[in-house]
Image 1 (cartoon, rainbow, N blue to C red):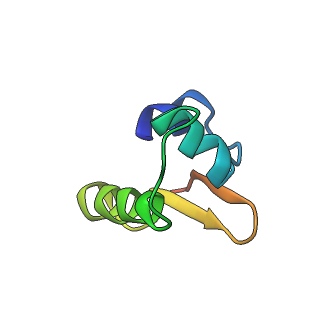
Image 2 (cartoon, one colour):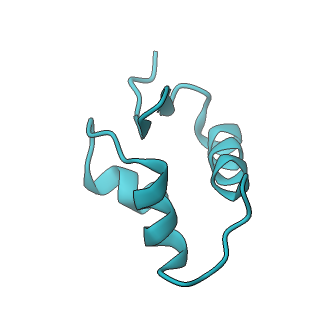
Length: 64
């Protein structure tokens, strides 16, 4: 997930696009799996590193 975000800095990646990148087609994904990954990355990298864009997805945020 972090690699996908780093490859497109500043661009919003939808939840569906990130799930496809992480799990591929045809694999069952738990409903909150992506949120768990985001939570763990934020714990390691800082809360402002990954920004949630409500209704759209995630992007790299500006660390303040």
